Image 1: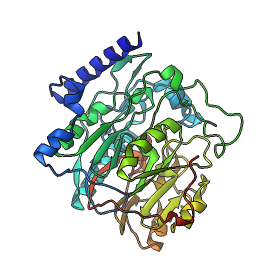
Image 2: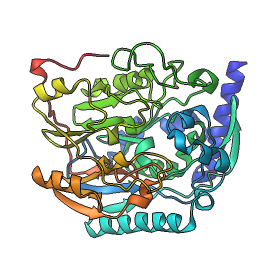
Image 3: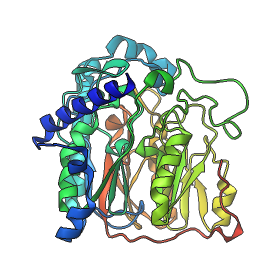
Image 4: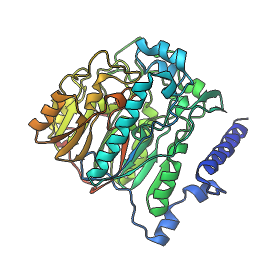
Length: 416
């Protein structure tokens, strides 16, 4: 029975890929076996990004087109603020453009396009995912739902050197989000990039609890505390990983479980890359990049409201960990997903320049104090559906090479 279900799932996935890419696909090996072709063609990968700060050359910026409000399933309920649950109940399945005020939506779209123009003026090549109608419903395995969006490529794509890793995606509404990015991934692969696809979840009734566990020890001692996901199979979002050459930092969150972190760890270990798990004082963690960020060699920024339990190890390894200033976003500004701490969600153009929200003068001054020039860009309306500059992008190519930036001679972060 299980093999029949998986065979049907595979056949359906292949049909979806063919629909979007118009590429005939006969077998799994014809799509994913890259080694032979790359050796024959001796291609140089167009993908090259080992960290968060080397000079940026090419980037994916997401699209708000056809973005759809997700239904209030358990995984959405536990990530969205409780004050917004009624919004999801009333608007789940509608286009965001129809669910929120028209002026807000228009400003959101304008800010994204203005951001693209600014990147291009800085000499950075910008590519965009294909528009996919996320309002269309689909039934697969043990669930039926509609899509979400292709606005946040950082959530889906983990770039490690010359390799594109597609994350599993944990929200049911994001299961087929890869369709928007598949033409890009295929194109990069044809040019010489490595391309790896994480294992898609197959049983959401086991993977996702109806309610998170809120009894027992805190997250520092019990990684399941407050989480809606189980360990039935690996799951991870790429935005729960922060890259620093031979060291990558990950968090157990509502969308990334320990098995997902272990999958990434084992996959990258043969390349000499270590994946360290960090934990934070955070009641509902979803993605690490508004909690803990690495902005240049030796400098990390942490959210003072969500301090890192392992911060002493990072400091002993030669890094300065700075508390981010409190965000300045006004309380009456609508945030349907995410929090005002998206002020931390910045994009490094290189070690000396950072793109920050134009009204967040506190964090602008912080960056100036550590020798980094802030480039101020209006983006608070784009923040409203769950992401800042880091979320809305995925750096594809930097002038980057694999290096070590941490001295662990005084003790590595324990596996937790």
